[in-house]
Each structure stands twice: as C-alpha cells, then as structure tokens.
Image (tube, rainbow, N blue to C red):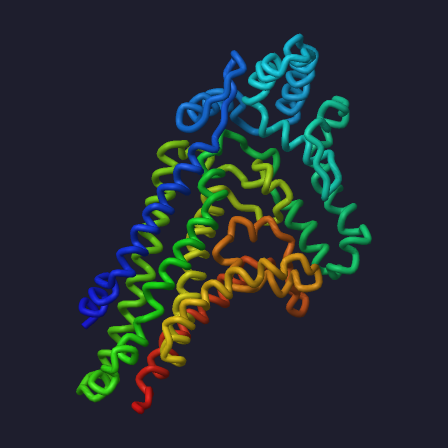
Length: 407
C-alpha cells in the first residue's frame, strides 16, 4: 500500500515539474555558494570559485593555529606594514587590490579584532588601524566587556532579567580561549546558503504532500476508499507513511547533495573550529564548532520540515482541500518575516517553526527564556518542542482521517 501511495504522488504531472524545479534550485544555490568565494591574486586580479578557494586556503593555512596574543600582534604588525606600503597608499585601485591581496591570509583574524574593539552593535572595518599593541593584548577580555556594556545599556537593560544576563555572561566566559583557527570557508559557505535550500525544499515538497489526503475526495472516490475493509486502518496508515517517506527522502537527498557538492569544491577544513571565528558568529553565545553548527542546521531543518509538512497534511485531511493545505508552509515561513521588525515580538518569533529552517541564524540571536531559575537559549527549546509536536501529529493525523464522514 505504501509503495502504491508513493507511486501516486510521484507519477503526477505536477510532481515531475516540482522535481525539475527542485533540481534546478539545488544546482543554482550550490553554484552560488561556490562562486561567491573570492580571491585577489598578487597582480590585483580577482578570481572566484574553486580556484579561488584553493588559493585562499593556501594563504590562510599560514595563519592556522591557536589565536594567541603573539599571533594577534603578528596580525597587527603585518596589517600596519601593508598599510604603509606604496600599493596601499596609492590612488590606483589596482594597486590597492594588490595591497589587499597580502591581507587575505589573516583577514578573518583581522576581522575578529575589528569586532572585538567595536561597540556591541557596531562594526568598523578600519578599527584595527587605530589600535595600539597594548590594546591588542586585551582581545579576549574585550569580547566579554563589550557584552557587559551592552547588557547594561538602555537598549538591553529591560529586555533581560538578571538571571538571563548572568547566563549570557557565563556562556561568553565558557568559550575556550585561545580559540583555534584554520581555513573554514567551505563550512561558512554551506551554512550561509543552507536556510535558502531548506526553505525551498519545504515549499516544493508541500506541493507533493498536500494532496495525499484530499485526492480521493477530489476524485469522488472517497466512498470506495473508506468502504474498503482496510480503508480506515492500513490504507490511512499507508498514506501517512508515504508522506513521511517522501518528506524524509527529498529532504536528506537534497541536503546531502548540496552539502557534499559545496564542501567537496571548497574544502572540509575548519570543521572543529569554534563558530566565533566567523564574522557573523563572533557574538554568538552558543559555544559550538562549525561541524556542530552544521549538524544542528540540517537536523533542525529536518524537524522543521517534518512539522510544517505534517501540519500541512493534517490541514488537507481536515479541510479536504489540497489548495488550502499547500499555503501552510508559505504562511509559517513568511509571516514571521513581516513581523521581525517588531522588537516586542522577538521572543515569540524566536520560538516559531521557521527558526528551525534557519538554525545557523538562530545561533547568532540573543533569544533566551527563563523557566523558574533556569535560563536556556531558544535552540534547544525549539528542537525539543517541535520534535515532540511532530511525533504527536502522526497519531492525530491518523485519527482525523480515519474518522472522515462520507457525505
């Protein structure tokens, strides 16, 4: 029965169109992830893609290792030396690019220094140029003091309780220092584009599963289906199983193809580096590695996909309409985006299922929740809650559809 239901789903003309769209989207997103890697050679010429990744990896490998005070001072001195070069001081853009090419090997560490010595909500690309050697030695302390200043500012003082502030400070102090650094651009590229591909998978798969429970009704075959001996038992279970298999297969095949192609092109290096070495993750209070961030992202995406699409199937079974059911993923994914500008709703929005589809973004947000004296970040909460809700949807969906009343 399950095989028959799966065959019904994938044999529809619309399913073939959907698969073509998904394949095209996979190719486009993978290409963009790889082609966005940029390297400037010693002549000031820019190259992109796989060849750029190779050159960038070689340049950054010279700076691999723990980011100690000695290495920070080396970056500071090297940056100052390049700033005093003829290429950097020239009015010729081509010459400026030649100077920039010499900074690429330590550009990530340079960026970390900039972020450490700017305000918590600020960024200045040239901040390192105005620092002294004495200030560089306070690099790790600055990350903590910057958070302290922000938590005591008017912007955040009323947003967090004392326990939440203490939790955030402890998370910052728990980061093992000095942090280890190596080329990590492959993981950065995968994670940067992961939310896009995951959301596309959910939206496209929604078209496939939304009609599973309304097909018989639309074809006026519901009386035959539910009058059969196993119509309200094994046949209903087969529909649920086929939906689960379709959702799972499409998700993991797409994600693994996407991740495998990008990481093969750009490199697997940096998997065990702390995410804080990346410019977008410098402020994160989740002390995890890039590999852990990736696993959270793909598993969270799967849980979110399963919940949203099972909910879509439930709506289809309840309303007997595939058209209404297919709108559920769009509503759950795009409505929170329109409300994201309302700061008063930030904690509520941080617990909505769309966050599961962009876990690599969620780990950068300062959404904390207090239960009694216990403070916890949003990531473990949404993973646990929606995993449980997804499991609950299976028996609920079974009971709803098997009790369908013929008219």
